[in-house]
Amino acid sequence: MLLSHLFDGGVLIVRLHEGLDVGTRGAAVWEFEALLGSYRPRTVVMELPPAAGAAVVSTVLRAERLCRAAGASLALVARHLSEAQGALRSHGLEVHATASQAIQSVESPRSDGDRADSAAA
Image 1 (spheres, helix red, strand yellow):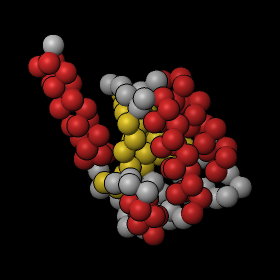
Image 2 (cartoon, rainbow, N blue to C red):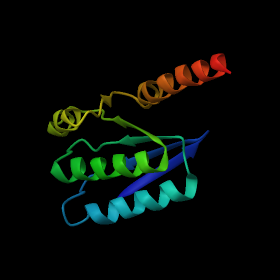
Image 3 (cartoon, rainbow, N blue to C red):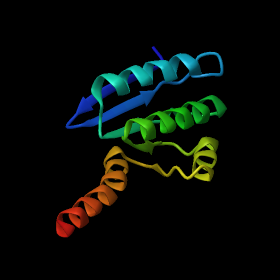
């Protein structure tokens, strides 16, 4: 198993497991795409493994494109510093220390937009 997940309150939390490499990233993306289609979350939190290398970065970037296409927000969590964090930040993806911080970062702008839409109506 390349990833595990939990779905609660419209939030899909996906944990990428250690050992993800170039040979398995396609299968991980396929698993992620199936979860995204099954649950149709508004927010996805992806937890990165401690040793997050190039295959993890590639997987996250693919997941980000899939989330964008599905209308879901993607937030990233890494409990350990890794080289991947710098690579992901260079692609405009912020990496958070906790899932609650990650969820707050993507849902706060959405809530502000919802209030602006309500005020305009």
